[in-house]
Length: 79
Image (cartoon, rainbow, N blue to C red; front, side, top):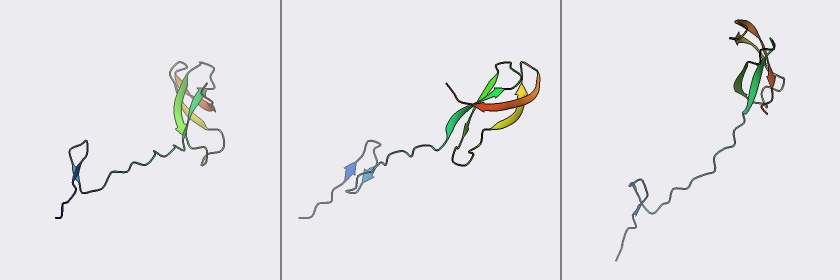
C-alpha cells in the first residue's frame, strides 16, 4: 500500500514531504553614524554608511534649523 505524506505548516499551506529551511539573516554591512553640525549648535543627523565602500569620514552640507542656514556636517561616532 502506498501512502503520500503531506505536511501542513503553521501558515496552513501544504508541503509535500519537505520542510521549510530557514537560513540565518545576513549581517548588515552598514553602520550607523552621526553627522554633527560645525556651527556648534549641537544639532545632528543620524544616517548609515558602508565602511567597506566609504573609508574616509563623511562630510555633507545640510540645513541646521538652529542656525537657520546650510552648514557643513562632519561624521562622528554614536556613543
